[in-house]
Amino acid sequence: MKKSSLLAVAALTGSAAVMLAGCAGGGTPTDGGDGGDGGGDAAGRACVILPDAASSPRWENFDRVYLQEGLEAAGFEVDIQNAQGNVNTYSTIADQQLTQGCGVMLLVDYQGAAEAVAADAKAEGIPVIAYDRPFAGADYYVSFDNVEVGRLQGQTVLNGLEAKGVAPADATVVYMGGDPTDGNAKMFHDGAVEVMEEAGITAAAEPPGVWDQAESQTNFEQALTSLNGQVDGVWAANDTNAAGVIKVLQDNNLQGVAVSGQDANVAGLQNILLGWQTATVYKPVADEAAAAVEVAIALLNGEEVETDAELEDGTPYIQVTPVLVGPEEVKDVIAAGDASFDDVCTPEVAAACEQYGVTE
Image 1 (cartoon, helix red, strand yellow):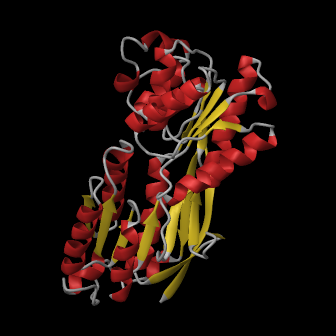
Image 2: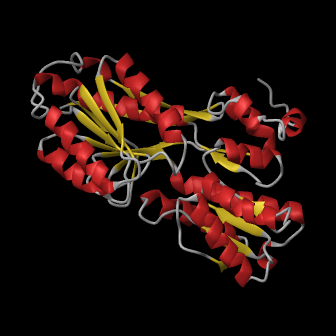
């Protein structure tokens, strides 16, 4: 294989850019090859499987669009499908894609389903990119610096406690993590715990991790009951979980609780502007998708990618930089196009949008 070098993932005005050097010499996108039963054209075909549409709106609204546009602009055929939260559907999609032929597979894992798909792909000599979520058997992992995401979430809780005038060592903090079948959930947890426990926080309660608003709401309600209604902070692993927590806080008229999040989704941005959520970790999807597209293009061109980081199992890891967003930074997310003014600044949020300079 020809070799190219992934030189850096750098923060640029609050977003990250990936530079892939030496990719020009790999031939045209549809040069021959035995990419599976689909024939020669399979060598220029990128197969992508997204996990669901419920855990985050990002998959369909952003990742699908950016990946499709980036790969098609480079001249490659793209097949992007969504497993809709079903491991059997995930497997069926993969079988269909592999039958048609793939030059590269880019997989977002769902409850471990990507591992078997990766094994099948690699048996056919097809390189596999783990996108956003890690899994065993991938050739490359492209995601944000997920331990740093957790650290930013932990710092969010500390910032919220400081604003409330509560010392970390005295605070009642509930940990609301993500689904443990998602390899990123542990990294988020480890980063957040590192920061919070170093400051003196001990978890007062830690329900099972999920990526589901309704379950998060139920779990937090039970935790709050066990704590006799006392809570100063909540480490919530993403904005969807945070929304479930916030519904319980609102029902109990508990304002001023430090609440973290992740994804900068519409509900999260609104909760931040209205003071129910302290901050979110913004992960510019366009930057992550661009990094994945660069790696996919190199592999489709028969080139090898070198990286500067790796997971514990040795998988090469392309890291993109996350950004902490509080009320003052909501306008930056909208300006970047990862949320719309009309969706965020609804009538009940309009005054807060004006206060924090959020404009169309």
